[in-house]
Image 1 (tube, rainbow, N blue to C red):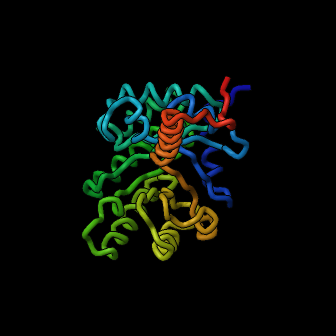
Image 2 (image 1 turned 90 degrees about the horizontal axis):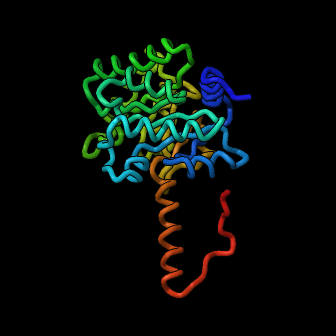
Image 3 (image 1 turned 135 degrees about the horizontal axis):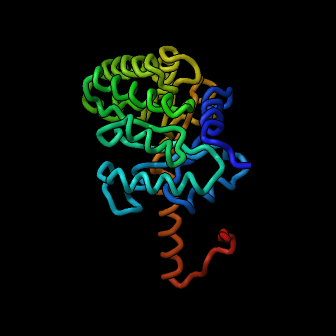
Length: 258
């Protein structure tokens, strides 16, 4: 039986509230989605906007909305798992963009604040929550603040204060989680969880980041990997091609896909 979008949204929300941290392995097309969805411990999928843009030949943040919606629609149609999409800053109209994403099977989204004035950012996040309610589903808003991502050169205490203020404001209007991409140390994660509450913080895992086990222990709800999964795949591709061009052979453990 095919799960309804309401059921998928409810499942995705439950995964964010579960004691076990939700690890989302980011995908960028149908074949990467299929490979990850087939893994026994995969419970949901997340798209990576940077990776989708790269696959289509766009710089990050420059991909047209119609093309992004087509890409995430294909991914959502390829699996029975819930899919949350990276919808950047909402393409000028976050509420309408999310409404259209729901129509093609998406039940959660990242929306970036890009450090626009707080009142404007809160209004955009509120519009996303309202769009989910209007469509009758418990849409999972992973509200992203770029306080850390754009905090270079600033006093770290001020950056943390901005992230907390923005994150709490987004939670107040109905965001499921607050996404704070950046290389976060343990004291910073502890401070964010104390302010947002357990199972409300979403982080990206980068090379050198805190381990998933520790992040779970600290009360983090969700870990994603952004463009790094595509980079891992492309590194493997380049390494295999280099070996072949140097006279080697295909690896005997190469995955065979139907």
